[in-house]
Image (cartoon, rainbow, N blue to C red):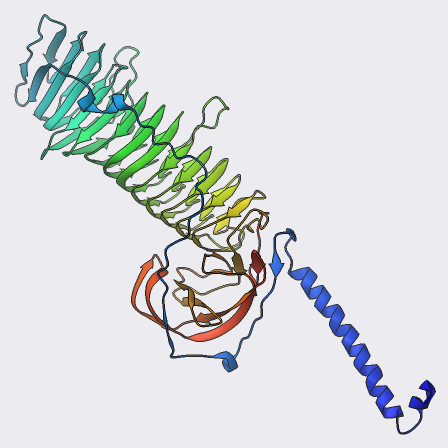
Length: 536
């Protein structure tokens, strides 16, 4: 049969149908190509679009129960800093103190000085006690109450200062003023309560520097199991022009005009319970580093919760390393935890609620473990101005609306090799597929106080999350997420006998709500919806 015979009956109708079908097919193919192009981010090498959206009642599956998988987080090789700033010379029991001077405040001041005329002079004028010491191995024990007095120490050698139930209020200067560049081992005596309050104005003493209710030119090293309450009416509550180390004890700053703790060279914590209320920062290291190995921190401030803030030049590295501890940080205006250099979190439990970035670093952020909840009302949940690397931990990071992000690392490397991550906000940086070894997916929006659930095609739980605020973009990464597998998304439903980390469920039973969509994790990084901010 010749081709032109299709134009004659009975084939003329068939030819018209075939012609229309071919045209429709070509149009459909062109639309699919355009859709694929517009759905890609700028980082096309790292991002693979994929998945399907299946709205409507036809996909509703309700009533069935799913066990929430409590599989522990996968952790890969840690990156960043792991140092503990250990120093044997900071342990009080490694030093010997052979002589003890006692000072008891009251209506009069009682002084016992066995080293009078032998290198230690103690004078008292109108409740102000001044110590001058030139000899080593001296311990001072201070007790009693004064409402208008002070303690000042000049010492050429390191010394031990035991607060044995002392309350000092000084109307015109620091309560304790250590004008010595040597170590001061401050021991909070067992079962004692101690308090220090300074005046709102200081009377100058020559050219001496005075910055807080408890001030030292040298190192302040706190230990013991007692308690210390400090109120800074002039500037800082506790300040050192060298470094401060907290080994143990309970330290409460009831209020500070500026910082709760302010140091020049370093802040180190190995334990203790620290409760701060301050008008500016909770803990600020002005020209050095911060290392926190352990401790319980409750910080309520207007400024930054914990900050290594030096950014003048490259002569000082203001890094911040957290190896453990429990942190509750609330800031009405500033960041929660900030380093102007490299910030490393190796472990710890964090609940951070701030106006500015919850966690921020100037050069890089490394998260190797811990449980982190970071909620920013007006900025990013976690923000690195350089690379962002996650090798482990459980992380919920909540940013504000667009353009703020749950995870933000500008246009730098975003590496994921372990951990469980949920980031929500107006957008997200896109993980770098070429260096990541754990899959992630970028999804669209969700509504506050709604349960969000992902399960595999076989019905295994992958994510169960109670949404804390309405968002337009979610980034999710987990060892439960596998490439080349299809997943279902449910909203609503309920959780029975559940255990959750600020909305991220780690145990319980989920009763499914409505299946809203499904997707296929087609590569290391898959985008189904949402907005991609800077990242690569």
